[in-house]
Image (cartoon, rainbow, N blue to C red; front, side, top):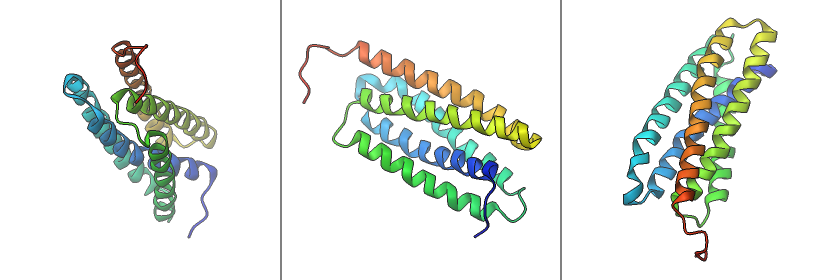
Amino acid sequence: MAKLTKLESKLAEVLGLAMASQEAVDTVSDMLEDDEQALVAQLKTMREEARETQQRVTEVAGTFDRKKTAIVAAAKETKGEAVEMMETYLEGEDEALDGFEFLTMAEAGEVGHWLVVTAMAKTAGNAQVGALADWALAIQQRHFQQALDASVQLAGAEDPGALED
């Protein structure tokens, strides 16, 4: 398999995180109770945008000389690691608050990764990756804020004196 540059490797990471994000959103959606269904539309949009991010990153990966297969393979490794982390964090949990707390951490991680890609693309003079990063970063920052806001909203509805199950 072709060796990846640092920029290509970071592109693979954000691709893998976009893939994992779709699974995370599905998992959190399944954790919502009937009275929390207002969050479904938000999660659906997040999933659609993660899918679009995956498609856009895959297209850009195809512009690297014979590296697309290696980038996608590395992305699948990142996805596996992220999904494993989610499964570990949410093991035994079934409340939406726990799911949104995980999404908050995951989205913050995606913001950080896209900032790294932005800096590397600038240093490399790669305008195409830079434009992709600008587009994705705005979306990830919104996803982070939405996950954080939902976590705070759900936490506010909790009885802080209730015992854990």
